[in-house]
Image 1 (tube, rainbow, N blue to C red):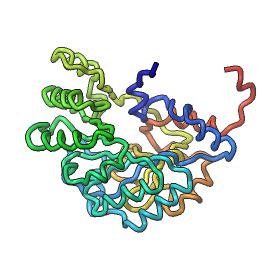
Image 2: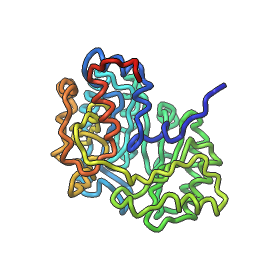
Image 3: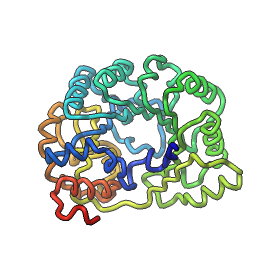
Image 4: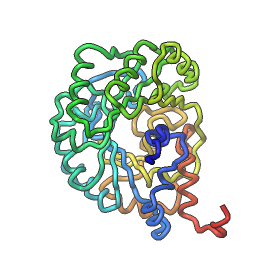
Length: 329
């Protein structure tokens, strides 16, 4: 009998127990024998350009004209493959589909044997060639309470999804302090109708304590919505940073060609930078091998006042240590 998929474990990472790391025997073996971590999953931001101005944007203070040179990107992708990268999430920054050589970028990752996830606001998906979409493993579409999920956009998205059944489709919907229940009902209904893997309802990262996910769950219940595919991710629980290893396992590569400690650096510091802060830069991505050589020792994450990855860091620290009496679990 096929095991049921645990939605939250399968489709979330931050503030969760990193079971995927424990289940990846190849990663565990390589880490144990080489005493170093592998950048198994990179976050790649090709451009800061965007066709929306979301009030909750975690990158709103970025240089909106910045984007990575394609030949530099190609070199970085080859470096990642050599280092053992198996997957990439192409995200922003800005809107990835505005990167002028997006199709070539996808082809480059694909040719290097790296599985591709895409985070997009969805507005330009209908312009992406089918042969490009077919190379993508999953696509998570960003939505929020301020958008109107109806009309031409909804119809175009339905056509794209229908034409690309090999892609695992999902929504990530940012819930405001005054949740737009009607909008959320439309999004969840569309996901159910078109066999999406899940809908992640996530609080605004700059004021997560203002969103009560239990009340939201109850509101959807009153609307008689089938929420079996909904992940309620309130993001209230975070830690002060400490010994940090996550940047070696799943580094973020910005449109400036630099490597950063994680995908949460924009809001990690005492005063959120809403950009990729220089203080959390690990070096140039073309020097990835040199950066990884330091992975047996932790980064100093003590300056991060908001860290959602301490569960990962605790596990990764243990993976790099020798353990006695390991049979006595």
